Image 1 (cartoon, rainbow, N blue to C red):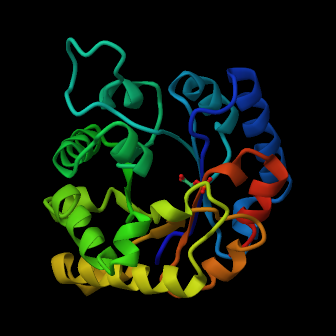
Image 2: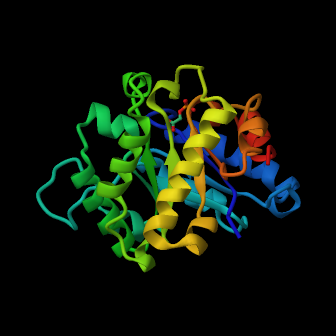
Length: 257
Ligand code: PGA
């Protein structure tokens, strides 16, 4: 069965105290209305800034189906990389998930598919689950290159994995033109690309794995459009930026399956 997920990507927002309050407010709502009583029995992941993670993992402790994740990790195990954080450090903090290849990492920090493949590799070696992000730029869509772009990002960044490693991956499709713009992909556009991604997975790993694989949509997803997006056959949830920073709004999205 495909796992449904609502994940919040907090990006570089909130102080530690603000982040603790945000997580606590959401967790209080979940405690009152457990995830397994919600349609789809979704999982929830908070992708928080690094310095928040240990505190957030204390807050979610004991709540079924709620996880904390890092937004990035370095591609090397350890060493002279001032300012970086390794996958084993994340794991040692009791964290279970990490984002790999968010478009802001790709576009603002020049992370290419080769580097992302190395990050994905070290993350799964350390038993972290990865959410591998892919997405095309506006001009790539306008020039009808979006399918080629996604195919290539998956092929170079992720599809080198063997089946076992791949079972620790999820994919988030996040068209760059939809991120933080207020212009979400239409449910039809999301479904079309998600179906394409699932087909790529089926060709590489077989139909059964593809059928059970979770593919999230991200890009201006909010409580108003989540239901329509999540209703699409191949959309298994969302990676939510701006709308994950308000507890009530995010919890509405969690209940949109
Ligand atoms: P957004 O961001 O929901 O604010 O568009 C999504 C993301 O970047 O993961």
